[in-house]
Image (tube, rainbow, N blue to C red; front, side, top):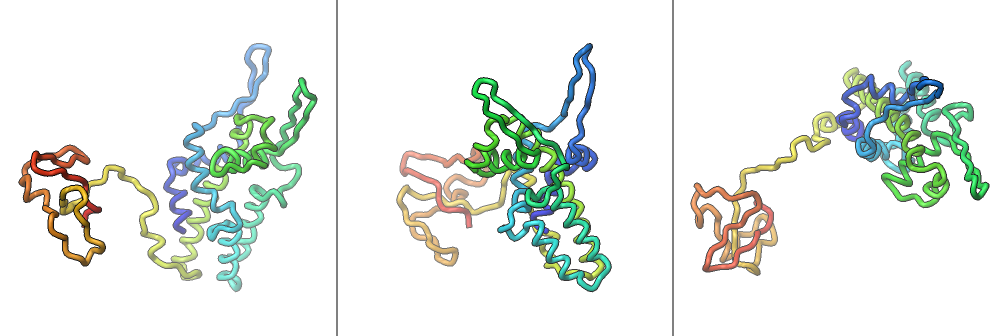
Length: 266
């Protein structure tokens, strides 16, 4: 639930219709004079990189939130309920789209390349190219995947990856809604905290009320929150008064002592 909520909070997931089109691999075919063309309108790569990082654990069988494990858990809790058939259908849909071992040969597309200089040829499916971008270019540096897709170039890998990442995002959002409805109906147990715990950092200007203390460089600091402040640590407000406005990160200096940043505010 935590991972799904984090995915649902991504900027790409805020426009589900756009996400649906990307997941479907939609493109345009047109004519420019006597020249025909195929055109894809895709998001910036940096945006998709962050999306890929958020969805990656759902594709890794060893991770706790691997989609197969999640659906197996739902199947267990719904074993005596008609909704279990829905879970079976969802599993088939995911496997057909993201599992290399079960993906149909006629699904998606195949890219063929040939180096005219060397005669070397290659053939990869869109899923293989997509995973080469995810694991070879972005969230890992998988040398084998990277080498296998080297001849196709990063543009071809990226073009194949966008529908895959969009599919996982879109259907994670849908699965999140499904799980929430099951929980509200009392069909599955959940720790209520997973519905309310913060999963993203939405505000990146951090300002908290704190007692700030300063001391000469080298003055021992407390070793625990229960230990009294050792001699030499002085509250900033006592030395400079409450009206002084310091720049962010600035430590006031004077002629009598060398000061330094203390430990984290307590």
